[in-house]
Length: 180
Image (cartoon, rainbow, N blue to C red; front, side):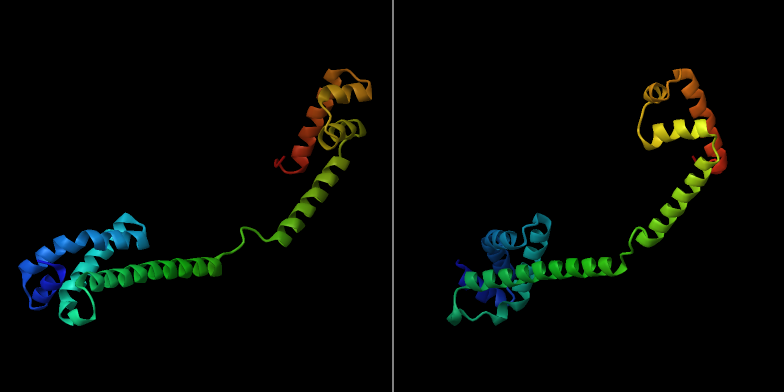
């Protein structure tokens, strides 16, 4: 039997006709839904919904307005488009909600103020170092010289520079409260 005849029988509640119609149209329905929805699992779900709707709405089929397959594929297309629209709307809602509840990871003004205060605190602690310690620490940490280059610039033995650096950094750590 063809889909048109089967659908008329399904409209009358014939379960065997529905089984035969199901076998005939489930492939084309799934193919159409899969092209619209794209996700395989969602496509299977939508296809099942379409075939269930087909059983329920078979009495509304009018053979004078077109073929059964066209009517069934129209049902499938509408249901697939509805699913895509629903998924898109849900995603957009989630994005809007996420943006509405988004709080910046930090307050830029507060961060800048805190950084400025920290720099001032470090400057005060550096000013408490001896002139020799301050000179070595400044060359190494602010000007980017290695210990060996600091020793060459100050015409001092490397061991002396290392001792000044160690003592200077120890005093800075104590001044900064163990933070450095």
